[in-house]
Length: 130
Image (tube, rainbow, N blue to C red):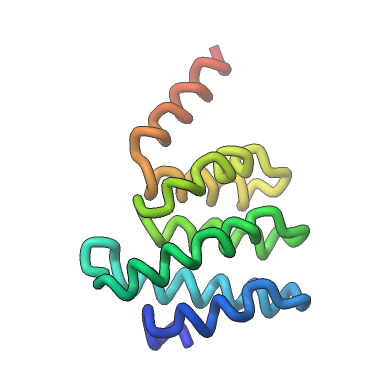
């Protein structure tokens, strides 16, 4: 499905809340890959609408009990780019996730969404070190 690019978004959204952890993980992975095939600057109106409808569902997966699902949700949200600014508060919480991969991915997603927020996050970390 991810090879279909943004056209696959509705189908993938249909399974990101599946009860099977692996189905959720793979759907989010494919969703992230589909979004990467259509960078924010080249997205047409239909893709922008699909992405805006997708964000709340993807944000729900940031709270998933599975580290792998949280990781893929973070990746997919980061692939949205600046239009995912509503996810920043949830991503900031994930920076402190017990899983270091999820924590790192959350910081990277924040950087992709808002360079300014990422810079403030780094400054905060550096201030705590000193």
